[in-house]
Amino acid sequence: MLNIEREFSTEEAKKFALNWVKEQGYTYEEQEFSTNDHKFKIYRGILKKGKEVIAVGNGKGLGDEPLVGAIFETIEHFYYNSQRHREHIIFSTQNLKRQLKSLGVNSYPINLLHSRSAYVQVDKFLGINNNESFYYPCVLNDVNFKDNHDDNDISGYRSDNGYAIGATKKEAVLHALNEVIERDSISKVLIRYGLGIYDDCDCWEVDKKTLPYDIRVLIESIETTSGTEVRLIRIHNVYSIPTILCVSKGKKWKYPLYGAGTSLDLEYATIRAVTELLQLILLFGKEDQLLFERLDKQWKEYNLTKRMLRFEFLSNRPIRNWNYRKGKKFHKNVDGLIAEEVSKLERCKRRTYVRNIYEGNGVYVVQVIVPGTELFNLILEGSVLLPCNYYGEQ
Image (cartoon, rainbow, N blue to C red):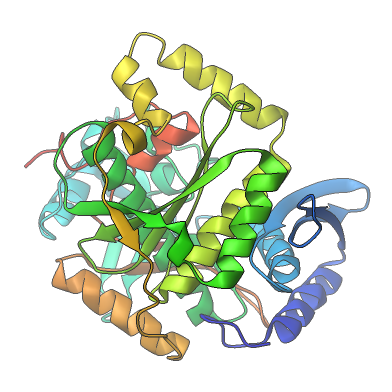
């Protein structure tokens, strides 16, 4: 089956991934998890070198998507954790700030960079349309990176944002781009509704009775399995690229679990969000519990932040209901989807840059950055940080 945002069928894509495993001399295993009624499943992939586990990934979606997603995400995590910053470019922090200002972007968190020598190691990205060079600190886009030039702590802003895999480079770029937009959109909802700071986004709660039948059945299965209510939020971002936030608040967890999805196809974005929530519910474990305990301790004296992290604004602030409308169905090729999203971003004065991580036969890994997009969503993962576009140099 050929899915939206793919250039190969799921069967072909899985063959590519398994061939990669064989060529590398590794082994691959799968674990299956399902809802109580066994209607919906997700998978965890485990990559091994001998007996050593070298990467783990999870797959979400409907049909056979979770099986393929698990092996691809496992390979993606392998490359993220073993990536090499090949360019080895040392760049002035002042040049970094000037580069961002030339794009009309605040330099935060770049203005937190301080160094004994005023230089940091950067990765080189290329403009998606014009191959224009753009440099960004390795320490910000690789959570495992250590920069000997750097003499500061900006760990709260480090992330794997925009890092994605695909059976083709175009697939990987599209998935990475959607992730950047998705996290930017969630960040802005938190800033506007959670902190009360105005931003260029709005959101509505989806009336679940108006959802397509298959998505309603999926949500009902999740609610029965978790014993919690699932709420669906439609985020309207300034780019007019559909983003869905799916939240579940229950007695089992100190903080809500959430899934998110972004796609020009609203139904696909919804399925991504709902199945990501399912994945988190089925795989909830000790590490997640420890994160919630850390959040509790970390923000003990900051009730506003704690209320935001608990998504209390969904109940405490007036959020309008929205009747689900499928809108136009996107059957464009991946090229067309990328072009449309990049065009929408450029109309908002946001440029897209790409860094190649790995290129092989049916396995491609990239990282995409869009300077000026928000990283505030990282606060949900335990980072201590401020919204980027409110405290930077103007």
